Image (cartoon, rainbow, N blue to C red):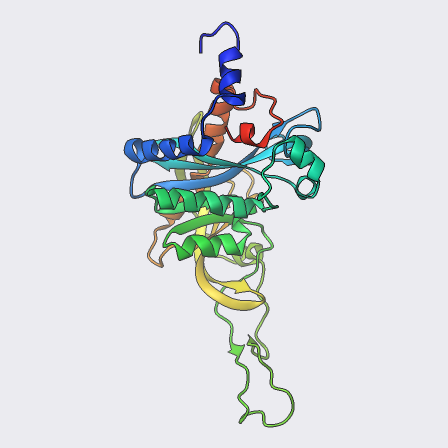
Length: 324
Protein backbone atom coordinates (compact mmCIF):
# COMPACT_ATOMS: atom_id res chain seq x y z
CA UNK A 1 0.00 0.00 0.00
CA UNK A 2 3.04 2.23 0.12
CA UNK A 3 2.95 3.05 3.83
CA UNK A 4 6.25 3.10 5.70
CA UNK A 5 4.67 1.39 8.74
CA UNK A 6 1.65 -0.90 9.27
CA UNK A 7 0.05 1.47 11.81
CA UNK A 8 -2.87 2.62 9.65
CA UNK A 9 -3.80 -0.90 8.58
CA UNK A 10 -3.57 -2.12 12.18
CA UNK A 11 -5.86 0.68 13.32
CA UNK A 12 -8.34 -0.22 10.57
CA UNK A 13 -8.41 -3.85 11.69
CA UNK A 14 -8.25 -3.41 15.45
CA UNK A 15 -9.89 -0.16 16.54
CA UNK A 16 -11.70 1.71 13.74
CA UNK A 17 -15.50 1.71 13.96
CA UNK A 18 -16.94 -0.17 10.99
CA UNK A 19 -19.00 -3.27 10.21
CA UNK A 20 -17.25 -6.09 8.41
CA UNK A 21 -20.59 -7.64 7.42
CA UNK A 22 -21.79 -4.34 5.95
CA UNK A 23 -18.56 -4.17 3.96
CA UNK A 24 -19.20 -7.75 2.82
CA UNK A 25 -22.66 -6.74 1.60
CA UNK A 26 -21.11 -3.93 -0.44
CA UNK A 27 -18.75 -6.50 -1.94
CA UNK A 28 -21.72 -8.69 -2.89
CA UNK A 29 -23.39 -5.73 -4.60
CA UNK A 30 -20.15 -4.89 -6.41
CA UNK A 31 -19.83 -8.53 -7.52
CA UNK A 32 -23.35 -8.52 -8.95
CA UNK A 33 -22.59 -5.32 -10.87
CA UNK A 34 -19.13 -6.21 -12.16
CA UNK A 35 -19.08 -10.01 -12.43
CA UNK A 36 -22.70 -11.20 -12.19
CA UNK A 37 -23.91 -13.64 -14.84
CA UNK A 38 -26.85 -16.07 -14.95
CA UNK A 39 -24.45 -19.00 -15.38
CA UNK A 40 -22.27 -17.95 -12.44
CA UNK A 41 -20.77 -20.66 -10.24
CA UNK A 42 -20.28 -20.46 -6.47
CA UNK A 43 -17.38 -22.46 -5.07
CA UNK A 44 -17.14 -23.70 -1.49
CA UNK A 45 -13.76 -24.45 0.02
CA UNK A 46 -11.61 -23.90 3.06
CA UNK A 47 -8.09 -22.72 3.69
CA UNK A 48 -5.76 -23.06 6.65
CA UNK A 49 -3.77 -20.34 8.42
CA UNK A 50 -0.77 -21.81 10.22
CA UNK A 51 -0.17 -20.46 13.74
CA UNK A 52 2.51 -21.04 16.37
CA UNK A 53 0.58 -20.20 19.55
CA UNK A 54 -2.70 -21.20 21.18
CA UNK A 55 -4.36 -17.80 21.59
CA UNK A 56 -5.55 -17.06 18.05
CA UNK A 57 -9.30 -17.60 17.88
CA UNK A 58 -10.22 -21.08 16.61
CA UNK A 59 -6.64 -22.34 16.52
CA UNK A 60 -5.91 -25.98 17.30
CA UNK A 61 -4.16 -28.96 15.76
CA UNK A 62 -6.43 -29.91 12.89
CA UNK A 63 -6.19 -31.02 9.30
CA UNK A 64 -5.24 -28.26 6.89
CA UNK A 65 -5.70 -28.96 3.18
CA UNK A 66 -3.33 -26.05 2.58
CA UNK A 67 -0.52 -27.88 4.38
CA UNK A 68 -1.78 -31.35 3.44
CA UNK A 69 -1.49 -32.59 7.03
CA UNK A 70 -2.51 -31.90 10.63
CA UNK A 71 -1.07 -28.60 11.81
CA UNK A 72 -1.64 -25.95 14.46
CA UNK A 73 -3.87 -23.63 12.47
CA UNK A 74 -7.07 -21.71 12.00
CA UNK A 75 -9.51 -22.89 9.31
CA UNK A 76 -11.52 -20.43 7.29
CA UNK A 77 -14.50 -21.58 5.20
CA UNK A 78 -14.83 -19.32 2.17
CA UNK A 79 -17.29 -18.77 -0.65
CA UNK A 80 -16.11 -17.59 -4.05
CA UNK A 81 -17.86 -16.67 -7.28
CA UNK A 82 -16.77 -17.38 -10.83
CA UNK A 83 -18.30 -16.21 -14.09
CA UNK A 84 -16.98 -15.44 -17.59
CA UNK A 85 -16.43 -11.88 -16.29
CA UNK A 86 -14.06 -12.73 -13.43
CA UNK A 87 -13.69 -14.38 -10.05
CA UNK A 88 -13.84 -13.07 -6.49
CA UNK A 89 -14.03 -14.27 -2.88
CA UNK A 90 -17.50 -13.35 -1.58
CA UNK A 91 -17.69 -14.33 2.06
CA UNK A 92 -15.89 -16.03 4.93
CA UNK A 93 -16.62 -17.87 8.16
CA UNK A 94 -14.16 -18.96 10.80
CA UNK A 95 -14.53 -22.62 11.73
CA UNK A 96 -14.69 -22.69 15.54
CA UNK A 97 -13.83 -26.19 16.81
CA UNK A 98 -15.93 -27.80 19.55
CA UNK A 99 -13.02 -27.46 21.99
CA UNK A 100 -13.30 -23.69 21.62
CA UNK A 101 -17.09 -23.61 21.72
CA UNK A 102 -17.15 -25.39 25.09
CA UNK A 103 -14.40 -23.27 26.72
CA UNK A 104 -15.93 -20.06 28.21
CA UNK A 105 -12.56 -18.57 29.17
CA UNK A 106 -11.07 -18.90 25.70
CA UNK A 107 -14.26 -17.59 24.13
CA UNK A 108 -14.21 -14.51 26.37
CA UNK A 109 -10.54 -13.80 25.71
CA UNK A 110 -11.14 -14.03 21.93
CA UNK A 111 -14.39 -11.99 22.05
CA UNK A 112 -16.46 -14.80 20.56
CA UNK A 113 -20.13 -13.67 20.67
CA UNK A 114 -22.35 -15.55 23.10
CA UNK A 115 -24.75 -16.67 20.36
CA UNK A 116 -22.00 -18.42 18.37
CA UNK A 117 -22.43 -22.20 18.72
CA UNK A 118 -20.55 -25.04 17.11
CA UNK A 119 -21.30 -25.41 13.41
CA UNK A 120 -19.89 -27.83 10.90
CA UNK A 121 -18.14 -26.58 7.79
CA UNK A 122 -21.14 -27.46 5.56
CA UNK A 123 -23.42 -25.52 7.93
CA UNK A 124 -21.14 -22.49 7.66
CA UNK A 125 -21.15 -22.90 3.88
CA UNK A 126 -24.96 -22.98 3.82
CA UNK A 127 -25.09 -19.73 5.78
CA UNK A 128 -22.90 -17.99 3.22
CA UNK A 129 -24.90 -19.35 0.30
CA UNK A 130 -28.14 -18.09 1.84
CA UNK A 131 -26.55 -14.67 2.29
CA UNK A 132 -25.51 -14.56 -1.37
CA UNK A 133 -28.95 -15.70 -2.54
CA UNK A 134 -30.75 -13.13 -0.39
CA UNK A 135 -28.50 -10.41 -1.79
CA UNK A 136 -29.35 -11.47 -5.33
CA UNK A 137 -26.02 -12.88 -6.53
CA UNK A 138 -26.93 -14.64 -9.81
CA UNK A 139 -25.75 -18.21 -10.06
CA UNK A 140 -26.65 -21.47 -11.75
CA UNK A 141 -24.29 -23.84 -9.97
CA UNK A 142 -22.57 -24.63 -6.68
CA UNK A 143 -19.46 -26.81 -6.46
CA UNK A 144 -17.07 -27.90 -3.75
CA UNK A 145 -14.95 -30.75 -2.44
CA UNK A 146 -15.85 -33.85 -0.41
CA UNK A 147 -16.25 -31.92 2.86
CA UNK A 148 -19.36 -30.34 1.34
CA UNK A 149 -20.49 -33.03 -1.10
CA UNK A 150 -20.61 -35.67 1.62
CA UNK A 151 -23.21 -33.64 3.53
CA UNK A 152 -26.70 -34.55 2.21
CA UNK A 153 -28.31 -31.67 4.13
CA UNK A 154 -26.16 -29.19 2.20
CA UNK A 155 -26.98 -30.88 -1.11
CA UNK A 156 -30.69 -30.81 -0.29
CA UNK A 157 -30.49 -27.16 0.78
CA UNK A 158 -28.95 -26.12 -2.53
CA UNK A 159 -31.53 -28.08 -4.52
CA UNK A 160 -34.39 -26.64 -2.44
CA UNK A 161 -33.39 -23.14 -3.56
CA UNK A 162 -33.62 -24.16 -7.21
CA UNK A 163 -29.87 -24.32 -7.81
CA UNK A 164 -27.81 -27.11 -9.31
CA UNK A 165 -24.67 -28.57 -7.81
CA UNK A 166 -21.68 -30.67 -8.80
CA UNK A 167 -20.10 -31.69 -5.49
CA UNK A 168 -17.23 -34.10 -4.91
CA UNK A 169 -17.90 -37.18 -2.76
CA UNK A 170 -15.68 -39.87 -1.28
CA UNK A 171 -15.25 -43.16 -3.14
CA UNK A 172 -17.32 -45.11 -0.60
CA UNK A 173 -20.48 -43.03 -1.14
CA UNK A 174 -23.38 -45.46 -1.80
CA UNK A 175 -25.59 -45.15 -4.89
CA UNK A 176 -27.63 -47.57 -7.02
CA UNK A 177 -27.04 -47.82 -10.78
CA UNK A 178 -30.76 -48.67 -11.08
CA UNK A 179 -33.62 -47.93 -8.72
CA UNK A 180 -34.15 -50.93 -6.41
CA UNK A 181 -37.55 -52.27 -5.41
CA UNK A 182 -38.85 -51.29 -1.98
CA UNK A 183 -41.46 -52.80 0.32
CA UNK A 184 -43.96 -50.32 1.71
CA UNK A 185 -45.36 -50.86 5.23
CA UNK A 186 -48.33 -53.26 5.20
CA UNK A 187 -51.81 -52.01 5.96
CA UNK A 188 -53.78 -53.36 8.91
CA UNK A 189 -55.88 -55.38 6.49
CA UNK A 190 -52.76 -56.94 4.96
CA UNK A 191 -51.27 -57.67 8.37
CA UNK A 192 -54.15 -58.12 10.85
CA UNK A 193 -52.11 -59.69 13.65
CA UNK A 194 -49.19 -58.35 15.64
CA UNK A 195 -47.48 -54.95 15.48
CA UNK A 196 -47.40 -53.25 12.11
CA UNK A 197 -44.13 -52.38 10.41
CA UNK A 198 -44.17 -48.60 9.92
CA UNK A 199 -41.12 -48.00 7.75
CA UNK A 200 -40.34 -48.56 4.09
CA UNK A 201 -37.50 -50.98 3.48
CA UNK A 202 -35.73 -52.60 0.56
CA UNK A 203 -37.74 -55.36 -1.03
CA UNK A 204 -36.54 -58.92 -0.36
CA UNK A 205 -33.70 -59.70 -2.72
CA UNK A 206 -32.98 -56.06 -3.57
CA UNK A 207 -29.23 -55.39 -3.42
CA UNK A 208 -27.68 -52.83 -1.08
CA UNK A 209 -26.28 -49.71 -2.72
CA UNK A 210 -22.72 -50.24 -4.00
CA UNK A 211 -19.98 -47.64 -3.61
CA UNK A 212 -19.54 -45.03 -6.35
CA UNK A 213 -16.06 -46.42 -7.03
CA UNK A 214 -17.52 -49.85 -7.79
CA UNK A 215 -20.25 -48.37 -9.99
CA UNK A 216 -17.80 -46.32 -12.05
CA UNK A 217 -15.37 -49.26 -12.36
CA UNK A 218 -18.05 -51.17 -14.29
CA UNK A 219 -18.59 -48.48 -16.92
CA UNK A 220 -17.79 -49.24 -20.52
CA UNK A 221 -14.59 -47.73 -22.01
CA UNK A 222 -16.89 -45.96 -24.49
CA UNK A 223 -18.37 -43.90 -21.64
CA UNK A 224 -15.04 -42.18 -20.95
CA UNK A 225 -14.14 -39.03 -22.86
CA UNK A 226 -10.91 -37.07 -22.74
CA UNK A 227 -11.69 -33.40 -22.12
CA UNK A 228 -9.69 -30.26 -21.39
CA UNK A 229 -12.16 -28.01 -19.61
CA UNK A 230 -9.82 -25.71 -17.73
CA UNK A 231 -6.44 -24.09 -18.11
CA UNK A 232 -3.38 -24.74 -15.99
CA UNK A 233 -0.20 -22.69 -15.77
CA UNK A 234 1.22 -24.59 -18.75
CA UNK A 235 -1.93 -24.78 -20.84
CA UNK A 236 -5.08 -26.95 -21.00
CA UNK A 237 -5.31 -29.77 -18.45
CA UNK A 238 -6.79 -33.01 -19.75
CA UNK A 239 -8.69 -35.64 -17.79
CA UNK A 240 -10.91 -38.54 -18.78
CA UNK A 241 -14.52 -37.94 -17.76
CA UNK A 242 -17.57 -40.20 -17.61
CA UNK A 243 -21.04 -40.00 -16.10
CA UNK A 244 -24.20 -42.02 -15.63
CA UNK A 245 -27.58 -41.61 -13.98
CA UNK A 246 -27.75 -43.20 -10.51
CA UNK A 247 -30.09 -43.29 -7.53
CA UNK A 248 -28.99 -41.60 -4.33
CA UNK A 249 -29.00 -43.68 -1.13
CA UNK A 250 -30.43 -42.15 2.04
CA UNK A 251 -30.64 -44.25 5.19
CA UNK A 252 -30.09 -47.28 2.94
CA UNK A 253 -33.18 -46.46 0.88
CA UNK A 254 -33.42 -45.08 -2.67
CA UNK A 255 -33.90 -41.32 -2.94
CA UNK A 256 -33.40 -38.85 -5.82
CA UNK A 257 -32.10 -39.57 -9.30
CA UNK A 258 -28.69 -37.91 -9.71
CA UNK A 259 -25.70 -37.87 -12.01
CA UNK A 260 -22.59 -39.73 -10.91
CA UNK A 261 -19.62 -38.00 -12.53
CA UNK A 262 -16.09 -39.43 -12.49
CA UNK A 263 -12.79 -37.79 -13.40
CA UNK A 264 -9.82 -40.05 -14.15
CA UNK A 265 -6.18 -39.06 -14.49
CA UNK A 266 -4.74 -39.66 -17.95
CA UNK A 267 -1.27 -40.57 -16.69
CA UNK A 268 -2.45 -42.43 -13.54
CA UNK A 269 -5.79 -44.11 -14.29
CA UNK A 270 -6.05 -45.37 -10.71
CA UNK A 271 -6.52 -41.77 -9.54
CA UNK A 272 -10.27 -41.14 -9.84
CA UNK A 273 -12.41 -38.40 -8.32
CA UNK A 274 -16.17 -38.73 -7.94
CA UNK A 275 -18.99 -36.18 -7.96
CA UNK A 276 -22.76 -36.15 -7.51
CA UNK A 277 -24.97 -33.67 -9.36
CA UNK A 278 -28.66 -32.84 -9.41
CA UNK A 279 -28.41 -31.43 -12.95
CA UNK A 280 -31.15 -32.18 -15.43
CA UNK A 281 -31.14 -35.42 -17.41
CA UNK A 282 -30.13 -33.62 -20.63
CA UNK A 283 -27.12 -31.80 -19.15
CA UNK A 284 -24.02 -32.39 -21.34
CA UNK A 285 -20.97 -34.13 -19.89
CA UNK A 286 -18.85 -31.11 -20.83
CA UNK A 287 -21.01 -28.87 -18.64
CA UNK A 288 -20.69 -31.14 -15.60
CA UNK A 289 -16.93 -31.42 -16.12
CA UNK A 290 -16.60 -27.65 -16.47
CA UNK A 291 -18.47 -26.97 -13.23
CA UNK A 292 -16.47 -29.61 -11.34
CA UNK A 293 -13.21 -28.12 -12.61
CA UNK A 294 -14.22 -24.61 -11.56
CA UNK A 295 -13.26 -25.51 -8.00
CA UNK A 296 -9.65 -24.74 -8.89
CA UNK A 297 -10.57 -21.04 -9.21
CA UNK A 298 -11.00 -20.63 -5.46
CA UNK A 299 -7.54 -22.12 -4.96
CA UNK A 300 -6.24 -19.44 -7.31
CA UNK A 301 -8.13 -16.81 -5.28
CA UNK A 302 -6.48 -18.10 -2.08
CA UNK A 303 -3.05 -18.01 -3.69
CA UNK A 304 -3.48 -14.49 -5.02
CA UNK A 305 -4.98 -13.20 -1.75
CA UNK A 306 -2.14 -14.66 0.30
CA UNK A 307 0.70 -13.75 -2.03
CA UNK A 308 -0.49 -10.34 -3.20
CA UNK A 309 -2.48 -8.81 -0.33
CA UNK A 310 -1.34 -10.69 2.78
CA UNK A 311 -4.38 -12.82 3.60
CA UNK A 312 -2.19 -15.09 5.73
CA UNK A 313 0.22 -12.41 7.04
CA UNK A 314 -1.57 -11.57 10.25
CA UNK A 315 -1.81 -12.52 13.91
CA UNK A 316 -5.42 -12.26 15.03
CA UNK A 317 -6.64 -13.45 18.41
CA UNK A 318 -10.12 -11.90 18.24
CA UNK A 319 -13.27 -13.23 16.55
CA UNK A 320 -14.48 -9.87 15.15
CA UNK A 321 -11.02 -8.92 13.87
CA UNK A 322 -10.60 -12.27 12.07
CA UNK A 323 -13.82 -11.61 10.20
CA UNK A 324 -12.64 -8.12 9.29
